[in-house]
Image (cartoon, rainbow, N blue to C red):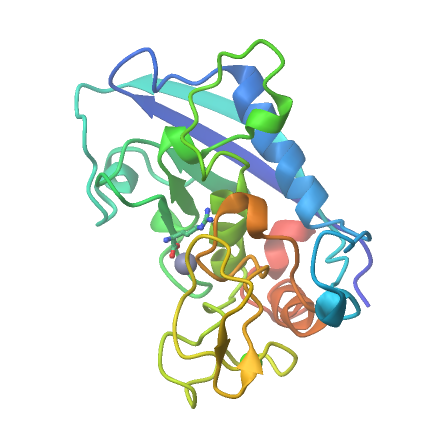
Length: 239
Ligand code: ARG
Ligand code: ZN
Ligand code: CA
């Protein structure tokens, strides 16, 4: 296999007020969550029936640049306006931390799209983890305050679909070890059964609350790492 993969990360913080200009500590807490979630070996936080499906993705995120930019715009929508103003930086996974349409946490570009818009976008109050907020001054909004929005968006950026396949039972997420499901789950709906199987609500690619999430599967690992293999759409990024 490819061994451990290292991904250089460029973070834009696009802020219209001081609250949105989140601290270095908050940004670093998000990178810590990514490194934890993509190098996980302890699945005791997910239900027993799913523990043996949990995978160590073996991908590291190396934060290299924090680029802070003031902009008076208070809502960047969902249509890449922020990327037109601040283009993706070649050779990095670009993360835009910017206020987007209220009620939306983040969005991502799948592999194969335009280089200038490639990366993930998160609103500042969902970027970082209160678990590492030792001073009590991070700008975060529970129950999405543990950094799992970025884990989810990076999953999309690595070619993962939502776990329910964005359709009914027969719509696949193209991953064989994720149970079929008829739609997203919210909160932490551990009792949800759909399509004749228990939904894997702990999966990062569901819509559960951050504290409920705890795994990518081996099948998802295979799909994500293929993106970086020789000939894959992001092979150049990992050198
Ligand atoms: N709704 C967003 C998306 O589909 C992200 C959902 C993230 N969920 C979370 N618990 N943080 O890309
Ligand atoms: Zn999603
Ligand atoms: Ca599946």
